[in-house]
Image 1 (tube, rainbow, N blue to C red):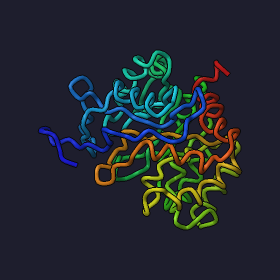
Image 2: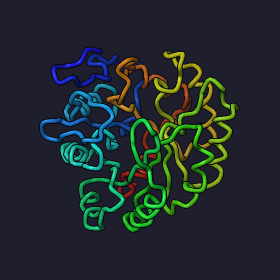
Image 3: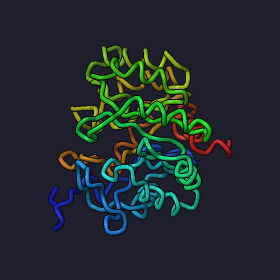
Length: 296
């Protein structure tokens, strides 16, 4: 996709289709981001990608277009540990958004309290080397102990090839854990492939490890209609129905060379959660328990 005059990338479609699947009322897009606006919320000096602005107005317009009610806004790595853009978007949501922050391990309790007041309910630890320079496990564990008093959880992003290495770290986290994008398994291996078996073993190791069954556009090399993704992921949703979340991943960081159609992503939902009960758990009950527990 062509760059604007500042050389920033566009990684999302401006004309997403209307999905055939209608999410149940109250559905939550539990994994999305905002970029900027850069003039108001500059990108981090350590940012590995420089996207065009994708602010709250565009996010909430997409939410309505796709038939969702709420958003969980995950701090984008291009903003580093300055969560101002995420907090700004939450503040403009009329109570319909909560957030996941990225923090400096040296953050103090006063700053954590401010994030909580702003709608943050978790912190994200990123282990993708192409996105972050440093991932200090010991300091992350310290942060995870300090957020326990707030009722938060930890979100962890990693790729399948380091899952075994991360198992002791994940076991040491004293609060609930949410794994982004199932730890990026090779879905072409199918539901019983090595990656998915290893991931199931992780889920079985603790009953408070959740996962986002997200990003067919990233994980299924064959592309739409994402048959490999559906074949690998549907059994996971059926076997762990109370610990799965779903989100668009809009505005699809770093996907400028393979921009997904958000409507087509939504239409994957009934293929991985084929019953109304599974859909309600995936889209409403589970994210509400994590992000709006006071309403449950």
